[in-house]
Amino acid sequence: MKLTAFRFILPALALVAITSVTIAQLTKRTATPNPESGTLETMIVSSGTVSLDLDVDRLNGAKGEAGADRQTLRFDAAADSFFPLIVFNDQLRGAQPGTIALSAKNTTILPAALTASLHNLVLERTAHDERFELVVRDAQSGFVFFNVEGNSYEYDAQAQSVQVKDARLLVSPQFAQSLGWPANADYLVGSISVAANLRTIEVRTVVNGAEESATLPAAKSTGTEASAASSGPDVIVGDLPSMAQFGSAVAGYVGLAIGTTSCNMGNVEFNWFAMPNTDHPVIPQNFYRMSGGPDNARRFEQIGQSWLKHGFTALQQNACGFGCVSSGTGSRLGVGCSDPYSASLNSSQSGLGSRAWVNPFTGAFPSTANNHSGHTH
Image: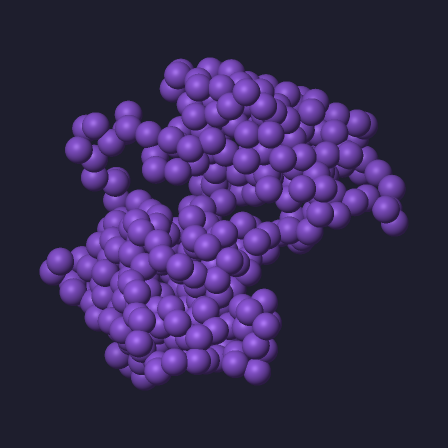
């Protein structure tokens, strides 16, 4: 069986992995016997703005003078975007892979492909082995429109903010191909600027190159934020109503699955199209236990993980009490609505697919991600 339990722990573990690598890097940079000591912070973008200053004529294929018609596209950065930046002793050490979701504030005459994706764009910090550190892409399809060159981070420790000013926007090979001028890949068509406020999500104390303690600061709240709907679609796991064993034990192992209730606490309907359409959520489950010592409380151990459940047919219920506004269709989860999956439904082998099919940075996966041909259960 490819089953077990629950996904909420994954973000916390991801943060541990990010900062543990950074501590190792700090230790390697410092010659013994005086390795670095201090405070290592992981910060994310709490709010901000992004602007794309585009040479619209050139982008639309006009052959006039460069810069004759420059237009600025303005975006708000989604609140608490997971775009991690590492700060050591108030000095920025760099950005880790992550994305800032962009909410368009205006528009202009653009190529059709860019216009169609305008409300799905993200600014992505790519993997460390990629040619470009930053790209602008479609969050759903993964299509890259622009590569960013010459970006430099200006960090203000007192204000807890960061800026990128007038980095160069280059047409990606993928976008150049769709525009019909593949030879103009890497063509300069404008600039990008970012002004972001940051908040700390993890603080680690490093002494002589070794981590001594770690804390996760609570997010600040105005008292009204908790009840306010998130901007855009925002699906959470609102309840875990059941857990059950499925199948027989094999070599001392059993298959488990948990029932999940998904709730849309955002202010936009959430797409929930069934396979082979890939515009739907996937639900992984992990299983953990406390272990070690006389009270079994010394270690937090992962003892299993599932494949991914691919969502299909969103019911329009109100399990989270947000006040469901039904979408009127099973293809979208309405604002404030909930959709239940029982433990037995989450254990159904035909609805599962390998985690390996999902790109962890873009969220993209193929329409055959739940194909089970070539193996048996």
